Length: 191
Image (cartoon, rainbow, N blue to C red):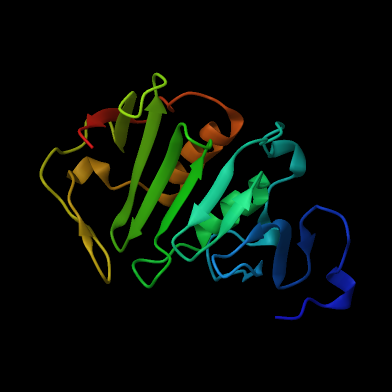
């Protein structure tokens, strides 16, 4: 895909045109520069909050990946939020993960009826030294409920079906280096 000349730059920062967001340090599994179109999602570049409202940290060492093949070292918050908004309910891009290499991560899976949100906390140096949590709404029903997608179902409880805005807030907390958001009950999973 050709990037309009008005949007080209040699700097290592996101470039924004009316349709495209380009982040040079990102790549797809095919080794090409990632250029993604904004979807008709709840968030568009023109609607993003004032930069003062964005996390004010440097995401050094973070890696953003998705099922569609994106791999981006040190992503901007704007890109993380865009990637979350572009997840689909099982058409090849329903999963996203933000991680510290060989350490903790937050991940989400989108379905027709919500999102599953999980957070892994590494507790030691060994491969088995971690606690893997799934988010659920406090006081929500523990009735079994599957996250439904085009190509898969993910088992869980009714309270595990998380809203998009709350997924974004959990990713923001991880991006900023905060702990598990208190908005949720975090249930350990045996994975």
